[in-house]
Amino acid sequence: MEAMERKTAREWIPVLKEYDIAFSVAQSWEEILEDEQAWANECFYKMQYGNGNIRTLVRPPVKFQEMGVPEYKAGPLIGEQGPEIMEDLGYSKENIREFQEKGILYVWKDDLS
Image (cartoon, rainbow, N blue to C red; front, side):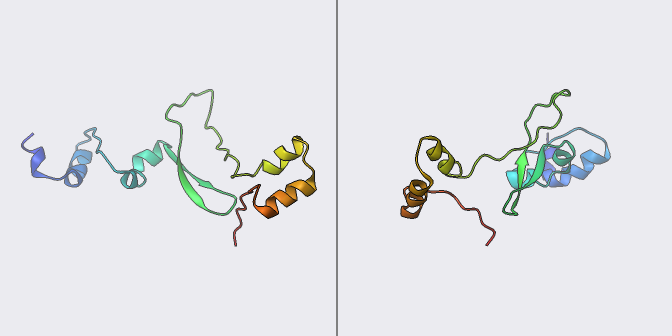
């Protein structure tokens, strides 16, 4: 324990790797995103959204061989399904358009502009 106190965690990493000693360092979210082992173990993946933004997402922590890697499906944007739902409830397209114009029904527009 005394020897461990003489170096920082960053200083110990190359030493432990050189002698093939298993170890793990407590990391912040930003540090984990740069961790080669986490990426090699497919803990994360890059997801590109319809608007062009790319984000890092976390894979499920449990893997089953039969399951494979699950495909990520984004949920609907705010109000995205609103016009369809209102039409199913019997509202006319004109009513729905009017509700949108008046701000009664909000439908998120995820434009690249």
